Image (cartoon, rainbow, N blue to C red; front, side):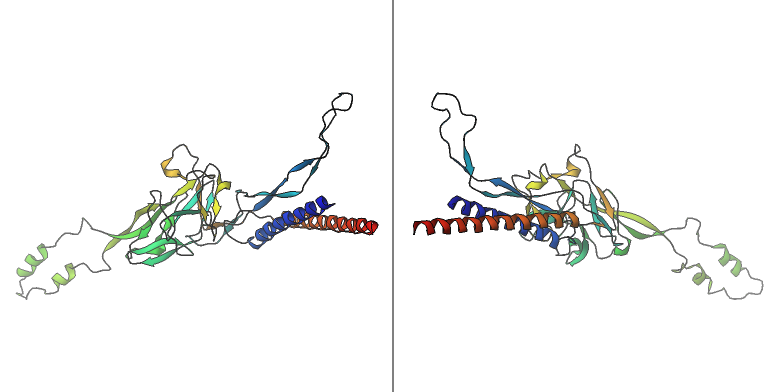
Amino acid sequence: MMRALWTGASGMTAQQTSLDTISNNLANINTNGYKKETTHFQSLLYQKIQTRVTDNEGNPLPVIGQVGLGTRVSNIVSQYTQGNLLETGNPLDLAVDGEGFFMIRMPDGSVSYTRNGAFELGATSQGFVLCTASGYPVLDSTGKEIVFNREIDTSTLEIDEFGIITYKEKVEVKDPDNTDNTDNTDNNNNNTNNNPPNNTQGTENEETEEDKKYILETKRVAVIGLAQFNNPAGLEKISGSLLKETENSGTARVEAQNPSLKKSRLLTNYLEGSNVQVANELVDLIVTQRAYQMNSKVITAADEMLQEANALRQ
């Protein structure tokens, strides 16, 4: 009966952790790039009740009697499946279609990773930098921060599916047919009326701002860096949808530097939502609640049986 008390308590503790995981999933259902977590259990040590392997006549016994001592949480695993795509209309919002992760520079100089592509332009002494909502710079395919000059028109920024960032620059086009009209001056000097030369001739030949011709030239800035991992489930969560590389996840492999990797695709004006399914979480919540109640019943029953045993002694 004492074992039953311990076993029931271990079950309640494990189900409490499962409840914490489910509540965290539901709390982050609207968090961009969040990945659902699942609690896994394993049984504790078993105690042998029957130690003999043969009977009195030497015949082998069919089984060795054992009783379990409860359960515990073995690990909590994140499921890195594709989340729902949410259209935002913001050209700086990016969703990853594939296995890639954005690379983010942290304040201590280290690199973290995320699937949350809600980016914006932050002002720095060098110009504008592409960064997260928390102000952490986004890195390009070479591991450098993506910085824009202050002179560029940020409204013309474009990001294609390969992560190439471009902008439009207004460039003046010289007209090759625009030559100086020197004959007009000679004609004025030969005027039979001896009228003075037309002083407005030079003004007419000057090119005004309205007369200038321009084209929009596409300029390339950088390529957004994406990294992949052999085991994304081994990444360590930090905060704000940021992840840290660990030994279990393996070393980050930048897609642009590894031709053998299947390249991810970027979708502009979209964000990757959470992959949490509300219906599944509510079912898991009910199952966890019932399991907790059953383990509580075990403790109550074991306690009542102990009380009856103590009463017999008296």
